[in-house]
Image (cartoon, rainbow, N blue to C red; front, side, top):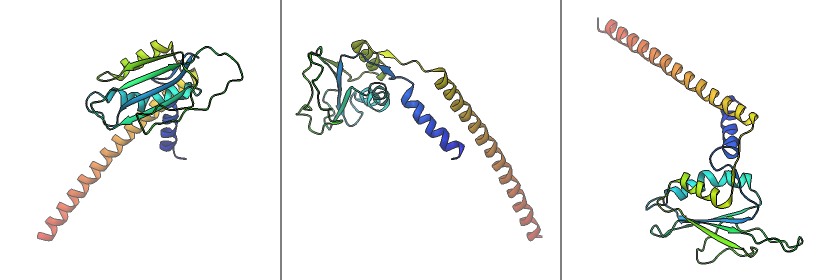
Length: 196
């Protein structure tokens, strides 16, 4: 595998493991549900960024928490993030089926969930994604994931490879420009010889 492909794959893996949204939430969080419009107009931009950038990291670090997304066509509708907290466990043998990963009908809530003790809702409309994330971490008592020394070394390697790639791209662009100028001079010289 060539270096560029390897770097892209490594960057994709690192993006899921570290960065904003990489956090471990408290054990009492049962489910997180996002509800927002499919287009980013009218204040749904922050919600979309949370879904696209932060949800994969949250899911990676919290695989037991069910995370569902409902994208509606109603641009004027609300953009909400709902956190469902589980009641204290009564019996260790109680099992619950996992929640669906998405909902197509906004009028019906996903079924098959354990009863919740508490439900908290964050209004995401017209809010920046960092503000939404900080509110979620505050509400769920989440702790941001600190990258390990190995992950930091990998990040440095990816950054170094990116800088090296940029230098190579600039050098190749200069070389191509020199070749183009030489070709133009040769074409001009040939044109002058043919005219004489």
